[in-house]
Length: 174
Image: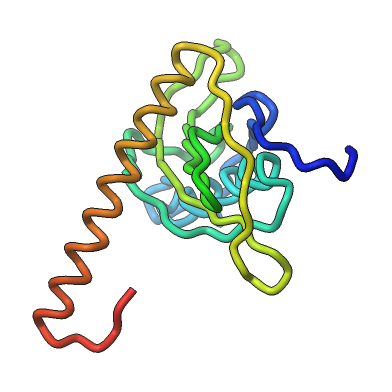
């Protein structure tokens, strides 16, 4: 790639996919994948999509709207797919969908979804601008618009939490 700065990328250019076979060390005493381990897989595949989009180092800023829809069992083939829904100045919202594949039947079962925010940073950890996202399909355009609404809701929640902490005299502020 040339040194010329890219100002936009399509959703397809940064999509990421990860596959995992679930082993006993990943599961709880009833044979289900630990929720925290699933969160780790989600964060990793989301980060790959964010790196591909920004072409820079990224840090996880938040994970929200994480839904555990169905359990994942020992021996299951877990498929995670990530797409950058929208980019803002230095941050990106990435949507991740987790599914279990039944390889014999050729079917997928939805088990989890999440939205994550990543911030692109330089080697000193300072935020850097990211390219815009160009949604091409109707589905991508809907996700792009929804990401804008979720960003507004996150900002409102952050302000509300800050106000609550301030009213309680809590010294730590985000």
